[in-house]
Image (tube, rainbow over all chains, first blue to last red; front, side):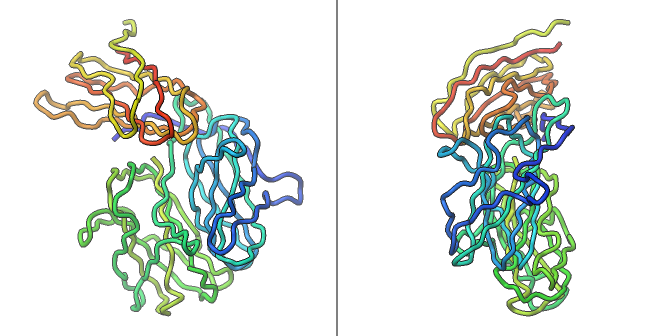
Length: 271
Length: 111
């Protein structure tokens, strides 16, 4: 199916960082898996229309978190990006990119929830990719599938107890609410911070149970014992998935430890 | 050849998740939908759909679909030209948002 907006990028707008010693706007997420309810402003008004957004979250403690980015005035925030999963140990930085339109003059803010009972401040930087000669704008909206606000994580995927063998399909969403033209797959480690260096391979599938078809297959990831994080933590792809689709993930790993091998998955569909 | 207006108007969406037909015809033209999204506010989501036929005996099927969400920085939106040589069906549907909106639109013919 065609999609008429054509987009290009001619400059970047960096938000949330000022001065040579600043590495992002500090915000304190809600504790114990609850959103704080307090939005922290990243920018009062963006300078230009944008066709893409890069969200950079950094943290310096062991935890899982789900991060929201909102648009709109103070007291009128509407969630633009919902439940971006963050999972890492000590000093971690996670980057999310979405090719969506954000108009000039938009106020952007951040909130989140953290698995810790007393989370420390996280940091958020946003980079907007502004349009060149562009007749229509980028994609419109991001839908989140598979986030678990009960533990600030995602849908649990078990690669199985046999090394290097796919563990079986796990449904992430039974029926997508909108068509997806760009999808981001993100991963977390379920608050488990005793990882060893291991390889993973991941499939994204579409279709009914027992009839899943691989649409993106055997993507290699690694997990690091140094940071207890998937590398990369997420990645995006152009796709063409109709609304009403069932999406599942299948995974294999070198790790057979019953706890350490488990992962969280969250999918972000851009329409 | 001059651009002509096949149809135009203002469509008021009175209910969410309801398709509204802007135009359905057999003009046999290359069409461009122009629509004004200036009334959209944050949380609004609008789906715009164009259906055509490949052969004259076919059922109408989706050719193009676009989804717009929240306030639009460039509110005058134009579809790509669609060579609807047999039949076209152009519809809008607001799927999200607290209050429904009115959308000005024009269906242009390039040939």
